[in-house]
Length: 86
Image (cartoon, rainbow, N blue to C red):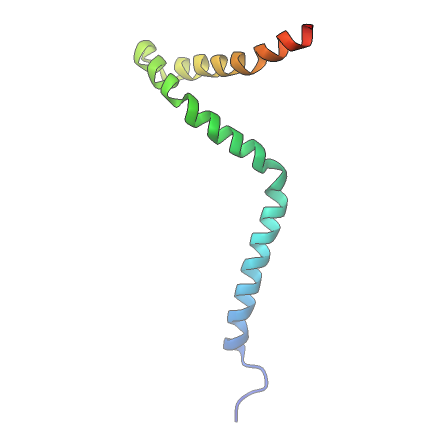
């Protein structure tokens, strides 16, 4: 005679439902940050060659990262400064 509640059968379904619920909750929590993360990935991909070029010249990773960050900031901020003055 089989028991009314088969623990092995139901534990598999419980794991799958729990896993899907955790994935959905994680996506809901991370959704406001998806745009920022995607933009950061694109900027990092675009400016990595500039970082490597500066690194060949400067030979210091920290200074190269700082100079690359300043270049990225100036490229992103300068147009807004010019538009804001008009």
